[in-house]
Image (cartoon, rainbow, N blue to C red; front, side, top):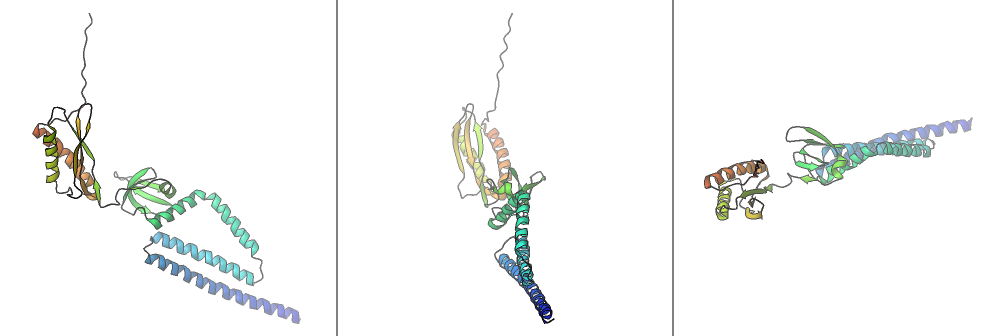
Length: 265
């Protein structure tokens, strides 16, 4: 009887200790997860990544706590560990595409090659970044189409962030006829640049003859503008150049085709 009583007493003690391990460990796991989340928040980490990391860390620590509590009860935990490992491997193989997107999403949120509101070209698509999640990035095209791009496609290639810099250079080419005055055309282009207040003085705009083409002498015009003014300046400048060339008698060559009709009798 004493042996049975000792076993029951030992079992009760182990159950109590296991309970203490579980509840104290659960509290500590939650505390550690919250502490890590606060540290990440102080470092300006993306909220989506903070939430995911906090949840993942909490459940991982909780799994160790449960295993420790079961071990205290004398239950063999090696099989549980092997089962968890096997399940993790199976899930990993089944979701390797999703895991690749997840890993890429974490890299995007950590290194921040672009932010919400930036216009980017990545993963074969172009658009304004609307949302960045763990698995996908949402883009909105200039004509208001929504594009959902897997994060692995983005991180697997080059990323062009059009909005990364405050200023941009506009590259334009204008052609004049071979019979037109080059100096007069250059003066007209420089005058138009000077009159447009949106064009920056520094860096200095460039106007130069770039090519003696088949039917035209081509000028390259490269002014610098604030990124927000890029499209407006390019469209407006193209229009005023046409009007100015017309007013100054400077021709803009265009493709022509001569047709010779031969009458055979």
